[in-house]
Image 1 (tube, rainbow, N blue to C red):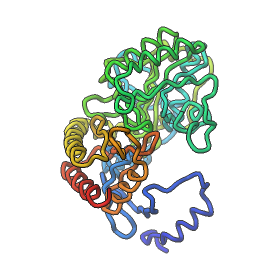
Image 2 (cartoon, helix red, strand yellow):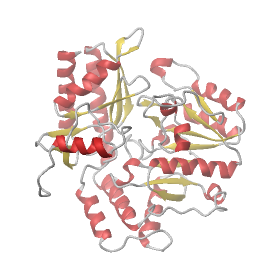
Image 3 (cartoon, rainbow, N blue to C red):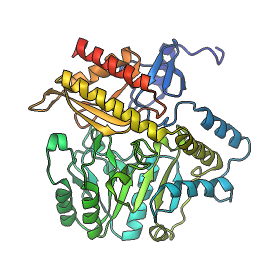
Image 4 (cartoon, one colour):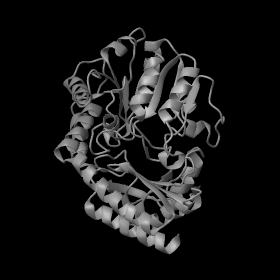
Length: 424
């Protein structure tokens, strides 16, 4: 076959069965043979165009021309490693630092959110001399051995051990929909006080796998006080929600008026190119100097050029403002659907990081897990890609490329209404 002729789907599935580990799953129920993408759309081999509402990695759009050009241009000039001195590295680090509050000015560039989160834990341990960590129930922080042990979403899930390791302390999900107006930060403080000396608190600035949950007001500020009183560092995991996705701020932790000791960023950083980073203070970074740090590919010139193009696109195309406006449009429409359909128990989120939770009974809040999966399938049949998350897999998550349009939002809401009225 020529390169322009897609391999038949049944042949691809046969090869996948032969060569891919069975732990790798296929999204959206039925296999989608995707051949190319353009901005907020993915295109299948049969010509079907899908509106992508779930791939937050392609932050500024699939095959974004500005990013694609930057990648190709730099690859034709130089691609090496950070043992050499080149303008792109320091320029990019400085530009990221300018988006962060003082004194978060020292960065380490790596290849994935998993690598970045593990590095952040190593830095916290080096600075504090402690070992134990605190995480939120339902959290997912990465796929390395250490991070599986720090991710209740994984160790309590299929194939997991069920209970945390002795050095991992788990605090409740601050979910005001299911848990009410509890003092979650005080509960977290009690856990920290009773734990061994802790190295740090690793927390997403908005919870993703736990169910697309915005943190309650004052939660982070109070939790950070408890952690610092115990000698630990506060690590904000911005891998899913950073780079302006929440609309009003570049980083989701900013809406809480706090300054973390360490910030981790990843997924959207390279718009599909593998990039991630850890930023911290000069003082904390100095604690990590005894053992040399090196990442073969982290911070290479091509990655830095791509990262700069992503930042250019966010700024020049006004994507943060777009996230604010489209997020509000989504929230209004979803709340109208909530009034119409009792199966929608809660609507939540910020900017273009949204979720709505399906329940069989609003009083008991029984999770509508099967119904959520069916709704995702119904929307896929209507050429809109969504997915589920949360401890009960009953939360429909919306975290699309930031280049979405008002028409895309309105179309999605109309198709959700159609799917809900016909099938649920």
